[in-house]
Length: 178
Image (tube, rainbow, N blue to C red):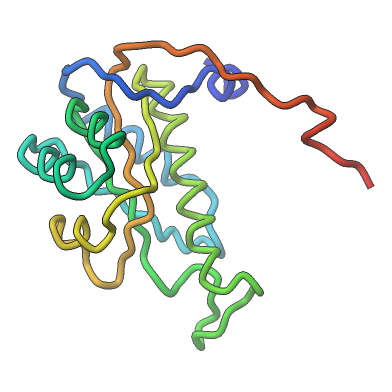
C-alpha cells in the first residue's frame, strides 16, 4: 500500500473484532512511528498499550463520555499516547523558541498520532483518535509519570466495519496561493 492510498482509505473505526493484536505488530508500528519528525529531534512521544480488560472497562466506565465508552468497551487494545513535557518548543534555558509556547508539544504528539494510525492501517488495523477524557483520572489510573502528559487515546484493533469516506471539501476551499 502506498502512502496516498493509505491516507485516502484510512477511516476512524468505532467497531472492532475481538481478535487480540500480536505484540510484534504493535512493536513494528511503534518502531515505524519513531521516525516521525519532532521539534529539534526531541522525540517526546510515548505509548502505553492497554489490553487488560479490567483497565479498559474502568476507563470506559469512569473516564470517558458515553460515545467513547462504546468504543473502548469493545476494543482489544487502547493506546494512551503521552508526551514528555517541557522539551518540545523550548530552549535549554527553559525559554520558548516559538510564539506558540508549550502548544508545540501537542503538534508533535499529533504528528505521531497520525503516523501511528497510518502505520496501523498498513498492518490491517483500524484506529480512532479520542481527545475527550478525564486526563487526571486516566493519568492516575495508568500511573503516568508527572513529567509526561496524556495527549490522546487511540483505539486500535481489527475493524468490524469499513466505513465509506465522508464528503471532502474541494481543492478550491482548501488551498490559497499568494
